[in-house]
Amino acid sequence: MADSQLIILDKVQIQQKINRMAYQILEDNLGEKEIVLAGIWDRGYKLALRLKAVLSDISELKVTMLRIDLEKDNSRLVASTDLEESKWKNKVIILVDDVLNSGKTLAYGLGVFLNTPHKKIRTVVLVDRSHKIFPIATDFVGLQMATVLKEHVDVVLDVDGKQDCVYLS
Image (cartoon, rainbow, N blue to C red; front, top):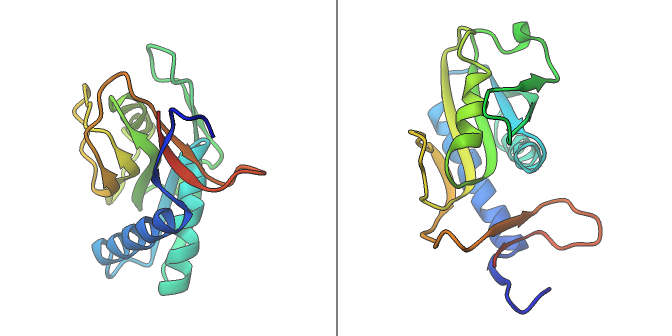
């Protein structure tokens, strides 16, 4: 680990945040039989898988996983998913990403669902940096923190040879 990196969440704290967000998702969806966890590839999807594991332990809720691949550097929405639209149509969608910075990634992620009927859409992020330039609100947040624009938040989840951590550099 470089000297300029500060650990803001360790492995245990990350799991505590995931557990809390899973309970919040469950409470928000009482009475639902199924939800769709739509994770933005790759760390958002990894976070969604962790949420699914906790939800499976604490409830009977059916959780369908959806992977969203975005071209984040494109000025237009260019996205693909690993499931056909019929698998998420008329269901609750929970859009998951690791860090909310400007809001562009979540806005593009929401764009995937604009032409499909759904019950509701919620957003989940592990870290909200509060630098939004897009009108995006987060429904479930692990950690909200104010940072300066020059700082970078790096989420390490399920990386071979590395401990799960959230770093500020």
